[in-house]
Length: 176
Image (cartoon, rainbow, N blue to C red; front, side, top):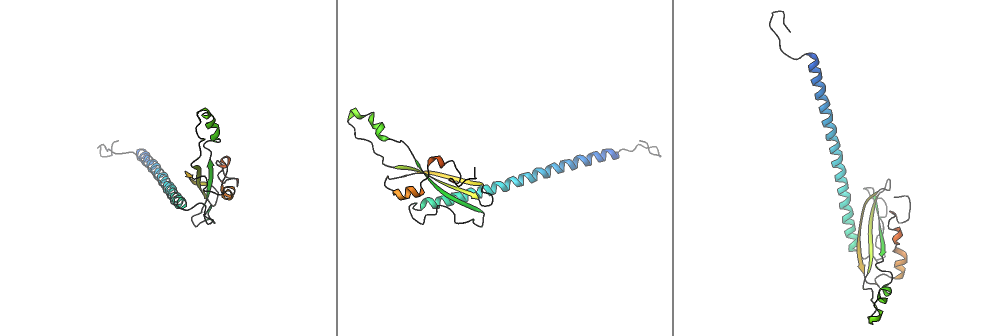
């Protein structure tokens, strides 16, 4: 473009400037959306890590206690300030239903019948969100006890069947 004095002016047109501003604005918008998403994801990760640590500490305290004690806490009393409730479940693990059937294979050898030295139990801790009942964390371990460790009354009162092991609330319903 020539100016009235006859010298050529160089620069950007108004359209070129507007296109550049729009491109920069879109880039900045995308950057802040990504930043916001990453901050939300980092917050969720910190919350999940805190719940996992809380569950791990609680489970360690519960495992250190004598499960047969009448004061053993099988579940939280009420929703704590952090909005979490929890329950402990105990399931027997059936390693072999009938050891005598296995011994029948060796009956001709006049070997003594095998005896169970330990019984195996799965102990599970489940933590829930008090507001909506969502399962927040679940930890479990397998423990061995002598066959006479639990009384029949204790077994009837606290042992749950393996069929209930998949149910989050041990039969209280509504939580998959």
